[in-house]
Structure formats: C-alpha cells, structure tokens
View 1 (tube, rainbow, N blue to C red):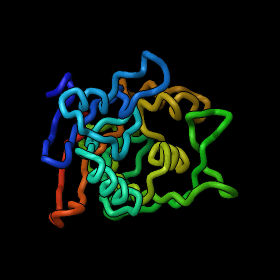
View 2: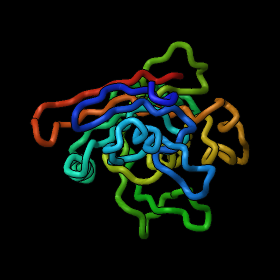
View 3: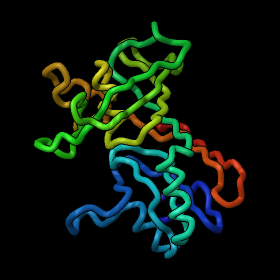
Amino acid sequence: MTQDLALVEAREDLLVFDKPAGLLSVPGRGADKQDCLSTRAQQQWPDAKVVHRLDMDTSGLIIMARGLPMQRALSQAFAQRQTHKTYTAVVWGDLRACAGSWHTIDLPLIVDWPNRPKSKVCHDSGKPSITQWRVAEDDQLPREFTRLSLMPLTGRSHQLRVHLLSIGHPILGDPLYGRDFEGSDAVFRAAPRLLLHASGLRLVHPTQGVTLDWTSPAPF
C-alpha cells in the first residue's frame, strides 16, 4: 500500500495498481484536484509514467510505465488495441434472459460539449465505439438489477457508461448518467458509488514477449 494506493505488482519497467473509486487517475484542474494515482505513485517511483486512465468514479486495475521508453511502448499497445481489458458492472434492469452468450453494443460516441464531461451517442459525427457484454451470475442481487462482464473493444470517454445507458440499462450509482434516467434519480441512488470495476488486464510485454495477466475481484 502506497499512501492508501493498493499496489498489485511492481516490475522494473512497469507498475500495476488497484485504483479505488473516487480517486483521480491524473491531476485535474485546480489545487483541489492534484491528489491522484499518478502523483501518489511518483512519490515512491519517480520514473512512473501515465499510460492510460480510469474515470474517477471507476475502480480497478491501472498500469503505469517506468521510464519513457516503456511509456511509449505501452501507450502504443493500448492505442493499437493490443491489450485485453475486462470490467464488472451492476446495471439497472433484469438481463438474465440474455445469459449464456456475449452481446455487442456498436454505437458511435462523441463528447457532449454543452454538457461536458458527458459523452453521447451520435450517428453523424461520433467515433466508432464497440462494447461486448454478457450476464455474470449473481444470486445475491435483487431481480431488478443484473451483474455484467464487459469488454470494451474501443476506448472512448465514458464508453461503458454511455453504451449501457443507451440500451436502457445504466450502471448503478452513476453520478453523471444515473441522476435523470427515465426522469428519476433512482439509478444514482441505488448504490453508494458507481458500480463499475476494471477487473482484468492482459497484455504481451512489449520487449520480453511474455503475456502478463492481472485480475482484481470487484469490491461490490
């Protein structure tokens, strides 16, 4: 643990953390938004470099490079979709009738500029965005909610949150997209946090060629 930051693995050229919900990945604007995962990591590993991000409200696995060469290599791997990421979410509605196979959401996304930082579906000028999902068993959930496994095949801002909202099953506890779903804030109030967690991360090491695989059970 580094300043309340859970270290999953430290290698000579990369670091993996389990980011808690509510912590920024990188500094934001303003003095009150400087505490973040990257700043905390760099206090112990000065060569730690940002490779990708998770939304502040999302918890789970996040990787940082050590040094500029590895940052470039890992950033390229993420840009070229050479990484495999999986997420766990709990959504509004009963999707158990869809259990047993993967389903695809293929809807273009764009930043909703008048309502930033939100994103939205836009068929005219949105960027191609694809998410795969399937039902994950959870006998403890009430029937009006469903646990899902998610695989984003692209990496747009708020992609998982907007895609699930677009099919009528927003993620519970979402402060951005769950406050006015169907004219109610019931989705937002259904959980004390956004129930979205980066639970799996796999990639081939850029120089060593070995497959690296990390998992983190969802804390909800």
